[in-house]
Image (cartoon, rainbow, N blue to C red):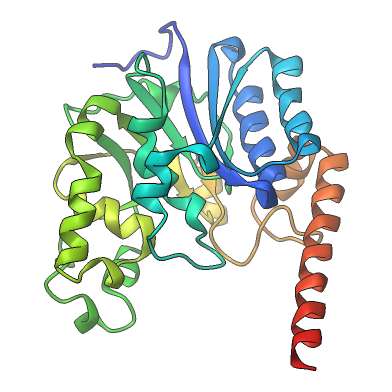
Length: 297
């Protein structure tokens, strides 16, 4: 059991991303560092899918600036990741790397007993140890109830997921998670995935979030909504969220943004990375347009 914010020792945090999202990953880590005085205790475990030397150098600034530790895991070389997650459904918004959180028990070193998972579209506003030290009440996973649970788990037509989810069941958002590694490993996610595939259920699920909610149904601890405040309105901002989670159309890394805390976010990312990231996104967008145009000819 953990609860006190004045505990000592390493704070393990996992991020998963590819080379298209290096700057938001930097912003997440830097926001966590700026929000705590325990900066040298932070251990960022970065599960990456192909990242350039230039972008890795950008990320390594976290160590030189704050003394936090960065540990890289190249998932292109992980047999467990390829075997377990390589065949799962994906999309432009949810690439294969988004499933990496489901294999943290196989990727992280054996001395890691507890870890925070953060999506790279989150922004930390309060000391991250408040989350790390939460009492998980013996459960393998802890998260925040998703305010859009009904829409996500039941889909556009509730009949499409009939027999999979009960709309009365609690359902967590997988963008911010506190994970007990031993309990997570005991759930045997690879075996459960094979069961879901054999039952023809897997293809009907909403990516990793549905999968995790199904596997850990009734076996997760609910956290205060402040630990994962999704696209907060002004009233929620006034109540002091601990971690903001950007899931809508308004993203703080857009050149023109109405996202909450977008000014603070830009300064946290730094203007240099913000504009480099913006140019990289534009270049990627127009190259796709050009390739489609050429392909039609």
